[in-house]
Length: 337
Image 1: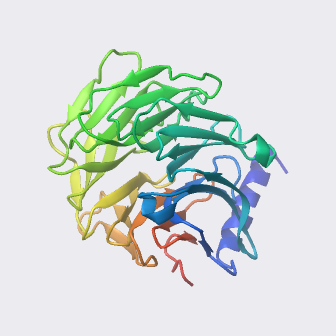
Image 2: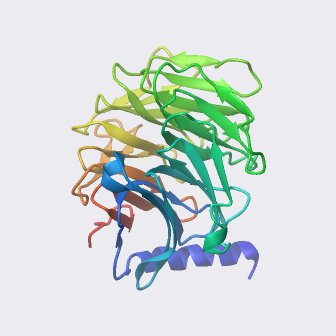
């Protein structure tokens, strides 16, 4: 059996076992803020949490694993301030970065002893860091977006940022790399704009006044390099093609409060996942001729603010919320079943 065959078999086994987990929910000590599947290990995910809803208090970075007996806590890293986002290294399966309320970025090594962590604390932002995203092509750098209105470019082995992007006029809620181009990323801000950047250029290359209210999230389509989705306080998601930025491709309506995160599926070109302050998680087909809303999940009892889709297991979703819970489930199934 080849390496690829083994990989497929492991994925099949994991997908099968997810359907029979004894416990598909993990209870965190603090309020959930972000969840990310590992790009290397099929059954591993990271969860960023904050005490007292992220207003004041400590944080904890969890690393969890899916087992036939449920979701188990592998390691946890405690911080003096709440954590709002996290991202896995695309180069080392044990490296993880957390976005902190004190303006710092904590770099963790899951394989290192607890006393050795964090292995680095990057401290340049002057307000809360709300977004982190690792470059999936170059693999040696990542972005951070902050309430100080800036985005910064980092490498793990450098104590200072490589560049500061400072054109937004209000909080940066999301900054994400293009999955096809190593130098291009998008950012979403409370100034109601979506900006496209090329790190080889001195300024942003495109500004889209995407919504009338704050834009809390953005993500790139994994199959069409010019297509993005945004989620806003106006309760809507919009799909954009940067080749025609004056008008959105489509608008998705169905949430009843602000959309906190929007994610394109890594497996289905037309599928988008979203989570909202209305406490629901939705899956959409943005090209559907009629009803784009495919699934609505209402398993959370507080603001749903963290969502991810596994790149290694087709249809596997994870969400976290202020109700101190993490759910993992297969698309189309009941997360609570």
